[in-house]
Image (cartoon, rainbow, N blue to C red; front, side, top):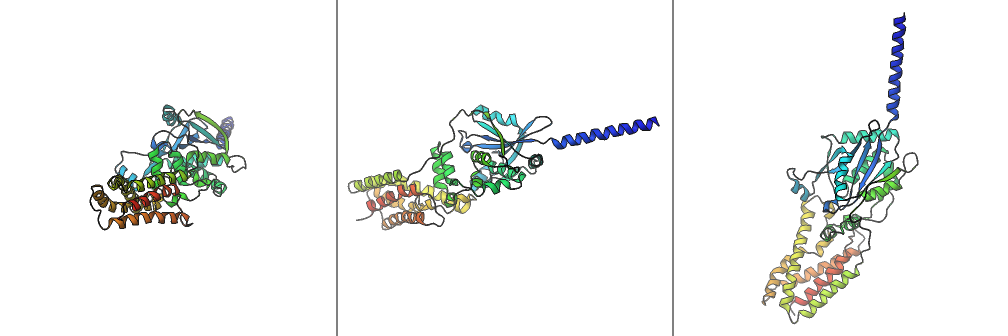
Length: 393
């Protein structure tokens, strides 16, 4: 009898312990944060970076889920980069290890702790752990629509049942993929010029706050303004993890077209004044300009026809940096040597100049507009000036 009572008591205590353990496990949810890294000095760091941070409630260990890893040594990496078939992967690593690089190079890092319910936090942590498995970690990277920031945004939105998209998808600050790219690339002239020349009209559609969150710092702004499922702010707290010790994120700045027009007309007037006395000098100076137009135009055609970089397709700048300038090089070379340019030289000069007028016409059309007014203001006078200066009189 006593043995039976003792057995029942042990069993009851064991059941109570199991129930307490289950209750404790059900009540402990991971803490979720979004770490935002400020832009760096290397060209692929100009847009900043971010990661999701999951803190284990039992151990306090913080894991960084970072969608920004790629392997430059993988077979075909350069070809994939050129043709727009980049493959990135999600990497789970200790948060302190992830922060070591940013500490060394002086890039600032802040973290936003999210106001999620226990169920939402567990769902997000489980989804990230599953996504980080080797067989699930790789994804097709796209600079604007599927990158490290949009993956973080989408994971949070999934945990919220789509509430983040519903809240910010209808709002806009008026920015575009071009404006954000040029702004963030502005410390490197070659980089912002490449974006501005190489992006087509698809990059000039006004973005919603949801789309604008392809930039990690913009995503942090969107989260700061959003609300959680309980109607309270989505961001519970925000703290600085590392100070920013290098140049800050570039500010937004207007891009007036008139300085470009002044430069274009100055070159055109100088060309017209010099041509009667020194046509050979004018032709010699035009040769590298036409060569540059040919090279850039050929590159834009290659992007449009052969690659998956769809934001570079249908680029109106093809009418300004015209690959038809290749046909001007033989006549320009002959003129620079004091010989007759040939019967077709005048006609191609007129065609190239007329293409810049077509670009101006397309700028005014509401269908698929492209914000390339500065380039039109610069290059239309130059092409027109070369036609007037070098055509046969």
